[in-house]
Structure formats: C-alpha cells, structure tokens
Image (cartoon, rainbow, N blue to C red; front, side):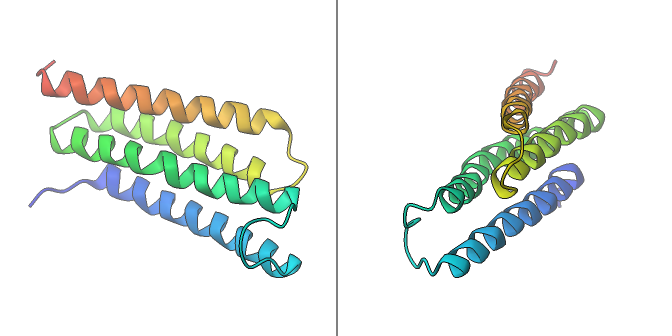
Length: 131
C-alpha cells in the first residue's frame, strides 16, 4: 500500500479551504436571496470566482504532488512546495472571501500557487528521470 502523507495532509487542508469558500458563497446567496448566478452582486460574484478558482487550481496541484510522492520525491521538497501552495491558496482565498482585502493578497496568492505548480511539474519530471 502506498502512503502519501504530504499529499494527504495537503488535500485535507485544500478540502477545508474549499469548504470555507463554499460556505461564504452560500452565506452571500442567502443574504441576497440569490438562487442562481450572482444577481449582479459584485461581492457575490467575487466570492463565486474565488471558490471556482480554488476548485480549478487545487486538483492539478494535488495530482502532481501525489504522483511525485508516489514516485519517491523528497518529502522535504514536497513539504516546502505544499507550504507554498497552501499559503498561496489561503492568501488568494482571503482576497475573494473577505470584502475589502488588498489586491496584493490575490496577486501574491496566485503567484505562490503558480510557483508551486511549476515546482511540482519539475519535481515530478526530475523524479521520473531518476534525478
């Protein structure tokens, strides 16, 4: 049986983040009586996109991480990458969930997310090549 502790822990935190972003969207929908779409509510539209972005970005990162971990990548490197991914996703999520948050949270959150994904691609490739 393969054990993937780094990926498993990262997936747990990712699921919690997605759950929190989902609850924020539900809260805003109920507050505004919105059943479908965003009813031209900019705050709700922003929360919906923040949730969607997390759902779009996290699966590929977790797949890459899991494959790299299964192929025997360094746990220390994976942990460092997971920390960058987690911090990036948290910053990005805060920007979208907390109205009035400075745009830099979004910018640096996405930057960290993309950096982690690039790192995971490289880690997996190097691991597959036996380097």
